[in-house]
Figure 1 (cartoon, rainbow, N blue to C red):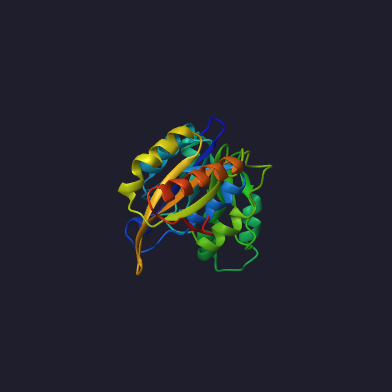
Figure 2 (cartoon, helix red, strand yellow; figure 1 turned 120 degrees about the horizontal axis):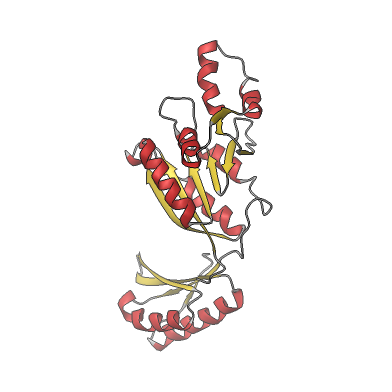
Length: 252
């Protein structure tokens, strides 16, 4: 892709993801939100609730990518250590943010329960908040790092508040799909030639298997829609040249 690509990485934090007890659905949602803001999700890493791992991975990724988004580990239990790790990564004190504390204190609870809930009000000193339209505790931002909830409903609510004032992207990535009733090996060389002629566009092939037979979905992704249409026309001609009938698709 071009040098104007704005990049992001997602850190999915939680032993429950790695154990298989919980399946992540946040990556697909956040990738779509960021794409509309002109940011390309380049990597996603799933890491455990281990302080050294979180800090090391975060520091590596915030230098490598324009934006880093974390999910998980900001709840009220002993293993919710993300906020503390972010503070250490940035060399900041961990404080109780008064605005988050005010939200938490709206719901009455016994002192021991309230003390646990207040762990969700911890942020590194100097952090700005990410709104939470569900009415629960907010997420926070430190520099190019956005720290968000792991619960999908809450994470999606937080993601809905991200906008171009906060996220400086380039152009959204668009795509075209066309089906070919041909095996990947048949189209491989011709597909490579098309990719070489259009280096700023991703050209991919994905095999499918249906009752009526097998084939390959050809997917092109880029920021220039006119170029995408040109490439799709080339793919259509290529499929015909191999004796296949192009299958138009509404898939993005």
